[in-house]
Image (cartoon, rainbow, N blue to C red; front, side, top):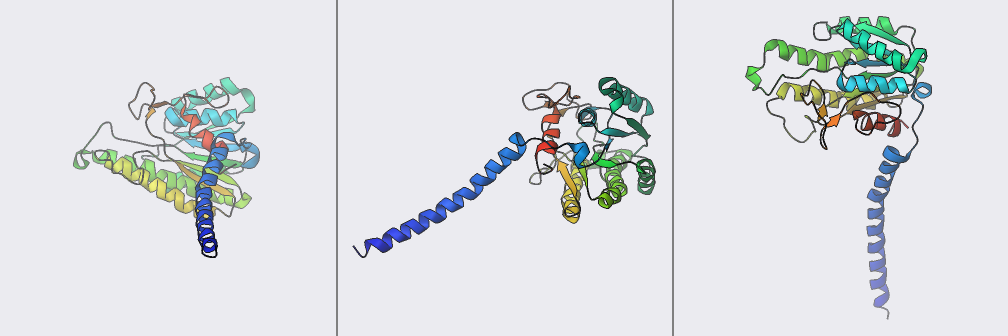
Length: 282
């Protein structure tokens, strides 16, 4: 009888430790489900500010995000290189949401403008505005698969400037404003071409530029996490956009389109705005 008691205690202790070890990932999963799918969204305007900046907003993911942010009541600074496309996007937003959403167009060619000039331009246009959200969405990619040495020098320079330099300098212009008021949110648009665990041959420069954005986002988020600024890098996979050359959506290829109010089932807004509204910012 005396030998059975120690054996029981050993089994009880080991079982308890196993149960505790099992509870930790289970609780983590429950927390993730709550944060992503169940927890009510925050009011972005009240929580961060009344203005949002969206680069690359005239098509694809950027346009969908601009419409979704407008549906949340945020005014928009639309940044792009084509004034006609910017005006068309602004007109469409005004037509849908009316005068309650103000839009301003910022015409700048991110591929041909120096970093300091981009930063000074943004500092000028955001002066006096309650900037709450920045979406660094503008991006360039190859026209098709290419070996590294086959990529034109102009394309190489454009990808590096738009995908890395522009996002860096725009963030540099906006962060001081957010830090001063101790609140803000920055979303950098990464890519599934860089998942952190696999290579992406024939699109090397594009994937490498997105890897930069991923590390940039992770590191700067730690720098500013105690200042009220939330910084994320989103990693969409295949999306039907002009840049990606996909024309139709499918089970594995999502459709980027403006939201019609709320979250759209067949829209990239499901995975992007859904996480913005429900994940760590909530």
